[in-house]
Every structure is written in structure tokens, then in C-alpha cells.
Amino acid sequence: MRHPIPHYTTACPDWETRIRKKQSLVPCPAIYPVSADYALRVFKELVLTDVAGFPRIGDVTRQWVFDFVGAIFGAYNGDTGERLIQEFFLLISKKNAKSTISAGIMLTALILNWRYEAEFFIIAPTVEVANNSFKPAQAMIKADPELSALFKISEHTRTITHRVTNATLKVLAADSDTVSGIKGTGVLIEEVWLFGKRPRAADLFVEAKGGLAARPEGFVIYLSTHSDEAPSGVFADLLKRAHDVRDGKVENKRFLPVLYEFPQDMLDNGEHLLPENFYITNPNLGASVSEAFLLGEYETAKQDGEIAVRRFMAKHLNVPIGLSLTANYWTGAEFWLEQGKLPEMDLPDLLAQSEVITVGIDGGGLDDLLGMCVLGRNAQNPREWWAWHHAWAHPSVLKRHKEIGSKLHDFAKQSDLTLVAHIGDDTNDIAQICAQIYATGKMDKIGLDPSGVGAILDALIEQGIPEDLAVGVSQGWRLGGAIKTTERKLAEGCLKHANRPMMSWVVGNARVEARANGILITKQASGSAKIDPLMSLFNAVSLMALNPAAPKASVYETRGIRRI
Image (cartoon, rainbow, N blue to C red; front, side):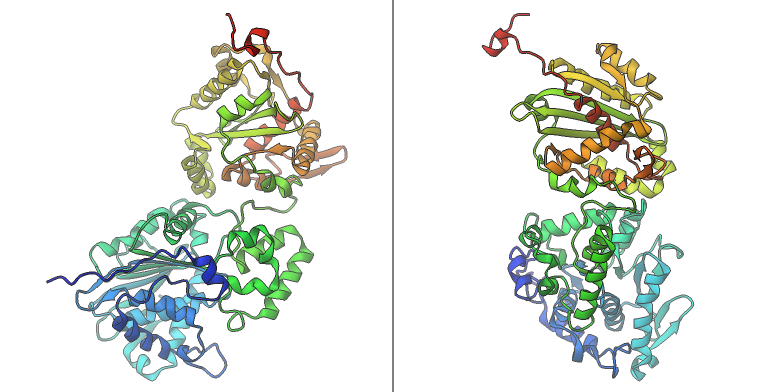
């Protein structure tokens, strides 16, 4: 006879209040308290050899750790052998004992496991991270005579074997060990943000969850800090799913997210940068995290500049980066996110509310994106310009630049980029959009990089667009005026856009080269990172900066009647 399932929830809609008051972010008590208590007794007995005096975990660890561990093991029904919650996600700032927690959880699972020859895995993105997880587990065993007798350790394969059940805990590095085909009873994935940068990480995550189908007691745990650049790939997908479940937008009782993040109002008000609020994303502040260390790192970051401050916020304050900056970054990038104030505006809205429109197009090689910018001058406030962007990518780009494949797939899901199947589909799409703009009577000019525009010109002519509307925009140092104009418009708050992830990535990729007679932002300076949609903005700005006249409306049109 099957027992009724206790009522529980994995949503935590009041998390903002809880995190401010240092309360638990686990939304409900352990579903099965007996299972939780038994596991916690084991977990708390493990010894921390990297802490002075070799204390047990139970003697020095904060309550938030016990809440998380209790939720994992307290989801297990000892009578039926089924675990009700099978996926867990802990997002927490750097230095908050993630490696120690992961080692302790997986070692506890190995001790409590009843399945003979069961396999448990810790999967890390690099060898260094793998060693950081394996060494604490190894040290916990060596510090306890009973555990030393119970387990056999193989350091060169990073494997711990239970001498009775022959179950194993293996720590794998995804950049060197084979991780395909694993069917683990329990899997812990470290530093998910790094996997987000890898194009095939989604396959690895599917493999990691594969064992849950045949092992009802199985689990998968994801641990991560925030990324040092805008979240992408599997990390971005996991974050979205976690936010939706935590906030109660989606019910998923098999997934429990515990996210140490700043409430949005604190980010908006700059309160996240006040040292007295660092505890929000550092629940171990004063324990494994030194307050003096954090303050010192923050002061150093401020001295090193904007890039260092952003990295400090991502790693030590868990603040997501919306726009990643690199060395020699473009000055306009500092104002880009602030001007993303048109989140609801799509292309038809821009066409309807603009008095005159210019179009910029750039890229299109098999090694590049093809970028398009539609730039409108606001009919109500002509000093204000509105920008809409889209990009196209040929499959060859994914093959040549696998390191950005996950990002391009993300942008395609977000409808900001089209992955074309055949050469020519991209130019046809652009020509059709230009025809739509031309039909409004508001189009001034279409600005193109003069090199390699034949296919685009042919497509425009086929759509009935006069050839003289397409003009070449000088590139290189001659584009410096448009770049400066774009910077000033952004800084003044007069160039607005929809704050799309693709453009944040593109703008963050832009690198500046100083020349005697100006500045350059070129594909060569930016390396393999793509900037074509940004270059299309500069092309459009170069035309709009000429202050084109708005077309005069017919007297009949203004009265609501127009004869053709």
C-alpha cells in the first residue's frame, strides 16, 4: 500500500524578506524528518582538517548548511526507497565552503547508500576544481579511523570505494576525464557557470540526470557562484528554471533551488555595495569568509577599475553581470545597460513611433554574424533615438567558433538571432525587413560596409527598394565620428534600446584601438568575439547624425483620408 505524499513546496516567494533577516531559504521543513536527522548525524561527525583544531562539521558549521543538507536527505522516504525532491541547486558566493559542503554531502550519501555497486559522482569543469572537491573528502576519511577502515581511496583516479557495498564516489574533471554514459545514483555538478560556456554541456547534464529514471532514490545537485560574464548556456537555463520555481511562477516539486542573491531593490539602490550588506550573499561571513578579506578585495577592485569591480560583484556578491567588459573596452559600454529602457518595444512599435528611420547592416561572412540595426528618431522627441537589432548566423559560424556556440543558441531562443539553414536566407530576411520599413515612407537610407555588399544589394533591389537608398559607410578610423556620437547619445540618455542579452554580449565584446587620428573598433581588435550587430548600429548612427529630414505627411493623410 502506497503512503500518501506529505504536503510540501519548493517555492520560496518570500525569499527577499528571509534573506534580509538571515532566515532559512529552504521553504519547508524536511519532508521525512527521520531521514534528515539520521543523515545530519552522519554529516555533522565528519572532520574538517583545514580548520584549526580539526573540528567536526557539526561543531563549527552555520545552520544554513544543515538546512540545505537536511532538505536533500530529508526528501528520501526510507519506507519506499523514493526521493521526492531529486534536483537541488545552491547558488552562493565564492569562499562560502562550497567544496567542503559538496565533499560532505557526497560522502554522507556514500555512507548511507544501500545499493551495491552504486556509483556517485562529483563532476567538475576542470582538474583544479575536481581536486578541490576530492581533497576535502579524502581528508575527512583519513581523519576518522572508522571511515579509514570503511573506505579505500585511489588518489590517481580520484575514487573512493566502500569496502562493503563496493559503491564508489568518483570525482571527474570534464576537461580531461570521460563523463559520457554515466548513470549515477547521486551526481553533484560543481561550478555550473563554467559549464555554461561549453557548447556540449547540455548533453552532459542530460547524462547526469539519466540515472534518476532507474534509481528512485537518486539525486542531482548543482553548485555554483555567478558567472564572470553574462550567464549563458546550461547555466542561464538553470538560473531561469530556479527563479521561476523559487518565485512560484512554475510549480516543480522535484526541484529545490536555494539562491543567495540580492533583492532587486537593493541592486537598484546600490545597497549591495555597502559592506554591511555583504552578508546577504555570504551566509558564511565571519566563518569561512573573512569580512576583512572581502573589504580588502573590494577596495582593490575599486582601484583596479570598472572591470575588476564587476568581477568582484559577480564572485563575492553574487551579482549577475548583464554586460561583460574586457580590457580596452568601448566607453559607450558603461552607459549601455542604463539606456535599455524599451523592453516592450518591438520593430512595429519603433516604426510607428519614429518620424524618420535609418538602417545599418554589417558582417555576413561565413565566419561572422550578419548584424542589422533599425534606428528611429522619436516623432515626439527628435533628440531621442531608438534602436532595434537582429542578427543572423550561418551554421559555419557554430563550427568555426564552438566556444560561442552556447551563446548563439541562447540568442536564437530569445528571438534576437536567426540560425539560417542556407546561404542567402539571411540577406532575404534583411531585405524583407527593409521593404517593411520602406513601405512606411519613413526610410532615409540604408548604411552598409562597402566591402562585400553585392548579395545584400541584390536582395534589396528584388524587394523593390531603390538602389540609391543603399549607401556605403566608410569604415576604420572614418567611423570614429559615429562611434563618438553613439557614446554621447548613450551618456546623455538619448539613445535607447530594448536591453536584449545579445546586444549586451556584443557591446561587451567591443575593444578599442587608439590611433593617432582617432579610435578604431574593428573585428580584428575584438578577436573571435562577435561585434557585427554593434557595427551595424554605428552605420545607422552615421546616417542619422546627418539629421535627415522627416518625410512630409500628405494633408489627406493627416485628416485620415489618403487617395492613391
